Length: 605
Image 1: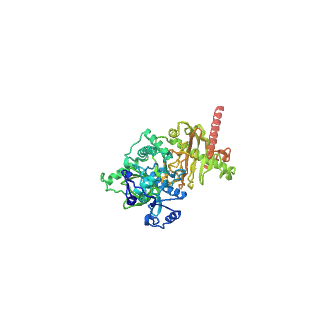
Image 2: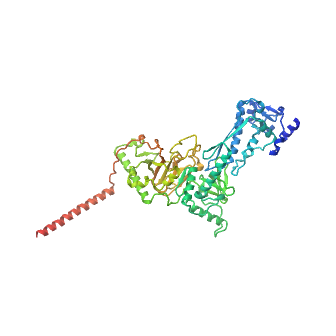
Image 3: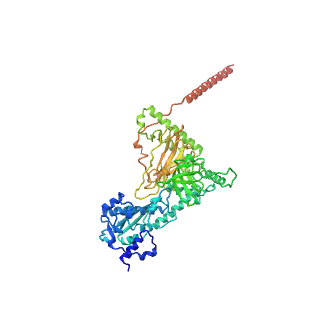
């Protein structure tokens, strides 16, 4: 039997010590005389920092542990402890597509708890009252191979289990802990085992995307250029679409040239190739400031998304900020950096429009715009133009959404046919039961302003993440550049709870004309401003499940009916050609009359 004095001495010695599982049976008891009452006034004084670092940051007293009589204050303290538990749980699992796991932890007392001795115990630490059993609760979170370290301040704030925390953990018999994990794909788990199981699958998916679409292998190693098979490209494309809500045709080939150059540069830097020696410096370093990127570590195999905030030309290191974490220095010789903002995609032989089809669509688009504007001017419909017409409406200054009746003609059947080049991708993400909901052209003119960030459609359910129900297919009819207003996407914003614009995630893909970009109807995006001197037309097609209808974006009732479109008057060159043609016709008639007269005269002779 341990005496009270010995128990108290052991507890006091164990405040700063650590415990192991073998010490469980040796936990001494604390007499009630060493357990005090923390008043609301004491708690407020601690929050104001009046106690400093003395006495564990609390009021001077003989007590080791405390009870809080106010149920409201107990709940606040339990919620504070739950936040720490939640942080540890979330850091034990890796992000997916730049989105982190979320763990909701609820610490609560059993309903109808009236036993004073079963209430949770607290202790003063660092100037505030804290749940005394917190170190033991934190220890229940197992270490995983994906564990992400937090900032140094939060890591230092975690205390190892001691005799004091062990006693408090055993004494709080009415304290219940509930953990609910929500994955980056918004799948809810109530068991850690099922959460870890999904993590394994997401980690496997990330590996496929990294290898096939980014050209990055194990430990962030650049892969040698190779052309993936159609099956591998489709598998990686579906995986990326489910993760990011985006599919860029040719994305599996966009890393080939860059990898070849980077591998050669690193060989030069290591002296394995003839050259001037080489360094780890990037000639484009200063141009990368503010650009989003993905950083693959070759030591930990981690992949994190961030934003470049600085570059040291002497050391060749980038300063990268990862979300809310402090910025880190990244060396391109020890890490692989994939820059995301303006990824130039090479022309692909799969799923694209042919040059003749691109030319037909471009000519039809410009012709339609000119005819509609001529009709507006001829009928004095300028006041109605702001509200929009059934075949043309303004989507911001210098930006028009056009519906072309000619696209329903047999000449443009290649757009509406079920065998269109991109339809196998559409069916891969939506299933076989799909239909074409709408089609049109976005025309962005020089001087067009950047759009407001938006999603084209809402979630069909806000209770759980549902599979994709509709997609947009964007096909530029001119080569996209940084200046002519490409579309900026925020990958992952099609997932519930992640809809907000995230600067560190944005991507802008500069694709050749005729190359489709397919994205989830719920994905956040915006058209950038057109600072070039040329128009930027983009053909778009919206596909959805058979039951899907969009009465907001594609309802003609919202717009004025323009009626029959007036043909354009002939241009000056066309008028000149017509006059020349008439002159030729008249001269030919005169020539024919002269010949006829000659024949008639010859006959009379």
